[in-house]
Structures are given as structure tokens and as C-alpha cells.
Length: 357
Ligand SMILES: [Zn+2]
Image (cartoon, rainbow, N blue to C red; front, top):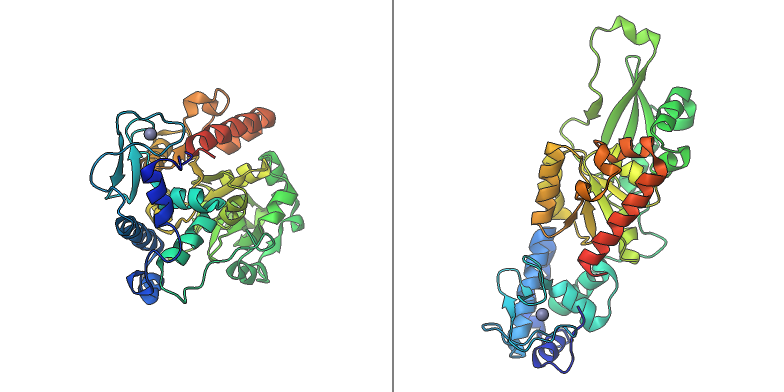
């Protein structure tokens, strides 16, 4: 959506987002902002957006002519949405779609990516002294310091140290380069071997891959997946920083293997490690351009729908003849790498259309 600068409301919008519209005293108190969680921070900023619009006498209570350049709106059909802190046009926007503070900043200040818009919002609406979250090209998406700690544990082995691990990954279409780029390690427990996925916050998720003969003396077989007790974390969420540099799409999957599969195909993949973590993800996620890619089964559908409800784009498996034949993206990759890559790329295009990027 491009803002029509000759439109009165479009001009008000532009005006409200200039420096100095709100005085220091009218801005969000720095310590209140810092103590809030991510969802609360966004809500605080959207609330101040409304305040700034009121200050420039923008129309917040009745319909007005849509400021979308491409929409020839003769019958006023745009309205400020108090609840969501943004604009909705009944003529040119889909139901549930909203032009929010961060879209407005992107337009008014020519910012790129969510992080830049977010930082600009902080600059405009939080009282001075607030430090901005800076991400340079060089730093984006690198291992976190919590990860580095784990990666140096002496009881964890490198992937290359076990040929069974190499074979296991190969069968699943994952290259050793992709495995190492994501810090995968090996771990042994009473003769059972696991691939260890290190999450951004330093927690671990383990996937059993082989047993050797010594393990036969133990009666119990550990579960296929083993999450660290009392801890949860997301795998590879840090790549959203990288995606943000170019407004790229980041896929969100349930399992770490699926996120790794997406990465293997040259795209961005984040895993929540459990559908139970979806709510936590919504609260902590700062990146807008994500696509839910949960499994192609009934529980996966429920998860995909939850993302859709939050305004994110979700895969619709029926649109993709190859992907639709398999339970998850890794099975699809193993069956036909090229077809999987082609359909994921098509999914990215659909999502970019949806997000208008
Ligand atoms: Zn419109």
C-alpha cells in the first residue's frame, strides 16, 4: 500500500510520524517500556501512535477517503481501528487485514524490514535514553552466546565423529554443511545416540538416531525426541534477524528437522520444538514476515490456523501437489528435492504477495 500524499488523511498520517509531535513528557516512560514484554511493547507503541494521530487532528472516529494510492475511493471506506491501533479499508483490504503503525513507519520513513520500523517507533514514541536493538549485517543470525557455551561441552561430539550420524542425516537429505552451520552435535546416553539441536537460548532438543550393541542390555528405549527437562526454547529463531535485512520470508515449523530441511533448501527456518510453544512464540516474535509450515496432518492444520488467526501467512497444502503428498517437509525433501524446492519457492511468492513485499 502506497500512501497518497495529496490525501488529507495520508498527510496527517505522515505528519503524526515526524519527530517532535509528542513531547518527551507525552512519550512512553523509558523504564515502563523496558520492563514490558514484546507483545506489551508493541501495544504501548501502537497506543502512542493513536496519541500522535490525535495530536495532528487526524480523523479517528468516522470513515474517510482511503489513503492508498491505488484505491480510487470515491465513497469513504477507510477507518482507524482503535483496538488494533491501525487502519483498515473496507474497500481494498482483506477482512482482518490492518495497516498498522509499523507499515505506516515503513511508508513515512522508507524503513526496511520490521526491526528498522520497530526501532524508528521506539525513537518516535519512547522517552529519551532508550537503547535500540541494533543488528548489523555481520552480526545477524549468528550463534548466540548461550549457544556457544553448549557447543563447547566436552560430552558433545561433532557430527563427523560418527559415521552413523552422517548416514542418518544423508538419508534425510541434510548435508553436513547445513548440520554444522546450525551447530548440531551428538550425545550418547547408555549406548543410545542422539543428534542434539542447540536452541538459541542454550536449551537442547535431542533426536535419537541409532543404537549400538551395548544398548541392548538396557530394557528401556528412550523416546525418539527428548527435550531438556523444564526448559524450552526455539531452534534457529535468530535467523529472523537475517531475514529482516532483506524482508525475506522465515518459515516456522514444529520440529527442528523440518526447520533444518528448509535451511537445507536455502531458505530460513525456525522450529518451535512443540506446538505447546506457539503462544510463547506469538509473545516473543518480533518478525512479521513469517509463514507457518506445520505438518500436513490434523494437528499441524490446527497450528497453521492459529498463525493465520494472528495475521500471519500459513501454508495451504492443497495448493501444492508435491508437498500435499507428504506428512512433513522433510519427507517431501527425501522423496523429491527439486519438487520440494520449487513448491517452497512458490509458497514464498504467495506469502510475499500476502504481505505486499
Ligand atoms: Zn482502500
